[in-house]
Every structure is written in structure tokens, then in C-alpha cells.
Length: 138
Image (cartoon, rainbow, N blue to C red; front, side):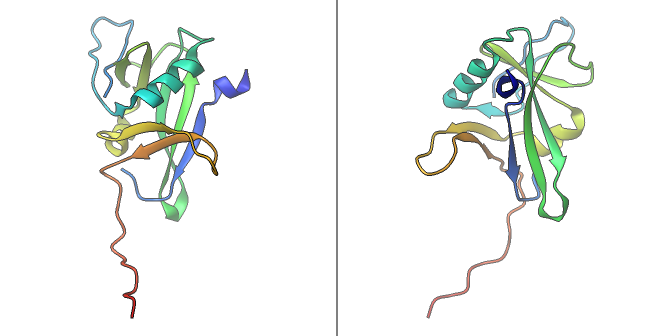
């Protein structure tokens, strides 16, 4: 199923910047990279239901002048040796060292919305915050 292969690509139009990780390599230590809410954890498990050996890849894509884009994809093993893995309850999250600096400390949530599509939401304390303030009201 294509939808289960490609979880979702979410755009974060800002200059971006736990669950621990399962690994078949006993030398690889699990590391908490991001916090995953119960709603997001449930959705990840749902996406992985038909592919229990696969893992979730969290990555960052350059999105030009407007910042970066978060990407979540399902991948089959193996996980590259230099990747950081996070063992979650029932699934593994993998992040490359290059992307770790942008996502570490973030929270991933799943939102069900009435007037918008459901989707993952990223709360990233490392994200660049605009210093522009709204004009004062008279």
C-alpha cells in the first residue's frame, strides 16, 4: 500500500532546527532524539502494522529560502551504522547525524482536525522564531 510506504511529508516554513530505539546491533545504543506523543505513537504503529520489520526515518529536506521540511518515511532494514536510533514502544525511529542537529528535542504529535487534513505536527524548540512583530493597533 503506497500510503503506508510514504507516511507524510510535512512542511515547516521556518529555519528548523522521546521514545528510545530498537536496533538489531547489540553495540548500538538507543538514544532519545524526539518526544513522540501517544497519538503520534499510535499512528506510527498503524502505518507499520503491515510491515513489522520496517522502521521510520525522520529527515530534513532543504526548502529553499523559507526553511526546511520534515519528512517521515517507512524504510526497510538495515539502518546505516552511523544513524541515531530511537527504540519506541513497538517501532524504531532512525535519524541521520546530519538531521539530528535540526530535530533533537522536538515533539511529534498527531492532530485530528475538523476543517483541515489530519497530520503530524512538529514542535521544535530549536526552530528559528521570527523577530517580526505585528503592527500595534491604534
